[in-house]
Image (cartoon, helix red, strand yellow):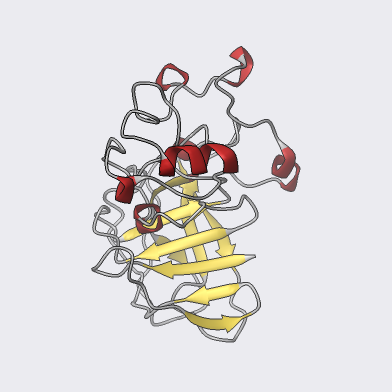
Length: 220
């Protein structure tokens, strides 16, 4: 599945145009860009919405016009869960946190998922759906960051040169049904090309030492 996303200037209010089964896109812009900033961390705009559970490892997501990236492209390359919630939350925990007091779930006890940059004291900042934990071998550092389109089928497009430590890899096939400005290859960190065997890999677990994904085993 490929899901193409373009960020709106207002968080939580993107308009989505269905282009075909498993393919979504918003208003598109040319993605040729200066390679400066490739590899910088970014948090997709989707994560500022309470009802969004995050991403699936089977997906590639391109958020263009990202205000967090010098390249204007925040790439989510076969990543599971939310960047801002490495250990995720089960459905029961989501309900407990959403309906609880400000002290029920917060960065101190590491329970629950929150809108990035908040402490979850306000109910409007608590994620109210189940969120899958990140995969140990495919965490945000290796799968979600600023990138740029380095190759494609459009002879008139402007493409970037990948900096050292990055490879130009085709991620989005041009299906001929729209979204041509997003199709093609993107700069990804060397050694992070997706392998379908990673789909069922180990997930971050705060209770297991060999699945410790940092942050003192707490969701930030």
